[in-house]
Image 1: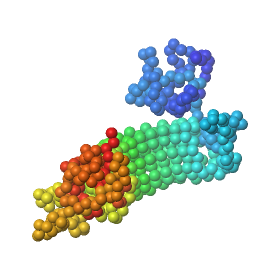
Image 2 (image 1 turned 135 degrees about the vertical axis):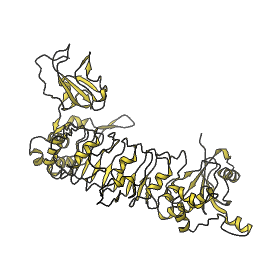
Image 3 (image 1 turned 180 degrees about the vertical axis):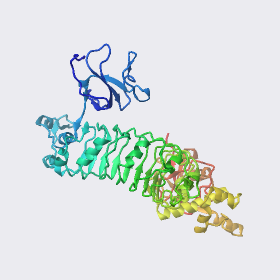
Image 4 (image 1 turned 90 degrees about the vertical axis):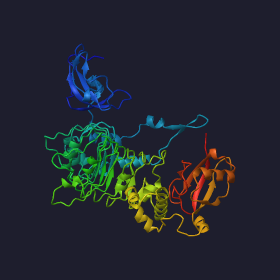
Amino acid sequence: MEESKGSCCCFCVGQRVLSLTSNSNERGTVKYVGAVEGYEGVWVGVEWDSGQGRHNGKVNGIQYFCTQDQLRSGSLVRPNKLSAGVSLLDALSSRYKATLSQSEEDDMYVTTQRRMRVAVELVGKNQVAEHQAHLEMLTVATLAYTGVCSAGAQGEIRLSAPNITDLDLTGNLIPDWQEVGRICEELPALKLLDLSSSRIAITMRDGLPVLSNLTTLVLNRCAMKWKHVEVLNRCLPKIEELSLCGNKLQKATTTSQPFVGGFESLRLLNLEDNLFDNWNEIVKLSQLQSLQQLYLSGNCLQQLWYPDSSSSTADHHHKDTEFKPFAALRCLLLAGNKISEWSSVDALDQFPALEEVRLSQNPLTDSGYGVAPRYMLIAHLGKITSLNGSQVKPRERRDAEIRYVRHVLSTMQRKDMEEIMKSHPRFKHLQVLHDVPMDLGGGSTGKTSTMASSLISVSIVCVAATIGERAPITKKLPSSTTIGRLKVVCEALFKLRAARQQLFFKDQDAPLPVALVDDMESLADLGFVANTTIIVDEVHD
């Protein structure tokens, strides 16, 4: 196990390395090279990206190196257990020019039911291999976890594979941004570069290369900080799509300006699976005038608002510049946050160009609570054409808005209009637009006419397995009928006990039926209109 005293070591502090241990794909950064008390030879101290090490750099009371936050992410390893990686051309050649040996081809088989081996023939293998062997024809290259550490000798990759436009270098050993610059310089056609799961040093004191050819850059899970993003701003003059997922970002800290500047061409910014918990940090992005898509799913945001020109945030902006926050933003993904208030949903309606929103997996929209069903979200968001990944068609919008108005009228009859408008900003507009009478009875003077106008036509469809196929039954029910009472009606119709029923509301344009979980809610409370479809299913044990 131990090496001799004369053993040499080619590793240096700061170098990226790959573990050669069997069944391991661990990558790390060299933190120490030298002797270890009580052992012969040279040892290499490595801090592993995964955080799965043996100690924090301190062994037998001696601190050989320090790990981030003093976590147990370090190990002392013999040099022959580590690899310094390969050049980009070597990885390309190994990945795209390698051919299967005869023994490897012989090992490719499937086993039949009679336990007989049948050889697998790769149809078109020779043609594909021949095409890939010509690296100069390659435009898309995937080299994830192949140990790439450098661009190689100057000019070699440019001569061998000059036409690569998309390059995936996920989980490799690129040490710093200077090496990234060399790769981009060697590949003049490169437009998309994926460096996810890497640890690339970005030193602010050195001049960083400008990557003028890149339009898409992916830096997911790279332990990035926002100060690095600010530095890269100056290096990416043509960037259109930037992905920074899973970097534990919590603040968009700017140095001299109240807003994040630059990024003139940036159309898409992906900040999913970070730690943003304050909408003020997101407002700092509102001056990115080309920004059309902002992905914030998987963060910790509890509320949001639209920073209009009268807000205090706007006062910090330069007087000579018109403040148009999120002027071009048309897609905002907010799934998996902690949004729990309707005021945040109403704020989304103020974004001038917003068309697509995702709000699933928030406390407000959690189907288990049933607080914000789809129709209410559609009614609150007047401009959106896509909600939670599903298109909002004109018919669905009309029905949702009418249902919403009826719901507001039935639940807030004793409150004045000012109070209603405070909680439901779009109510009056929708009530006039769809000509819904303020009196749910329809304004009739006769008792019989009033009762008739308050009846709702309901089509009831039973899909319970124990009942069997039944034709839909249409019933006219008072708008005051509760879900509990509706179950009694269904029990009489289908001989399925009310306690065994699970009712759903099916809208023609909605993607999925909506569960009706509150037996005390009435048809009016739910905003049901004529020709409503109710699905009766059976509770499964």
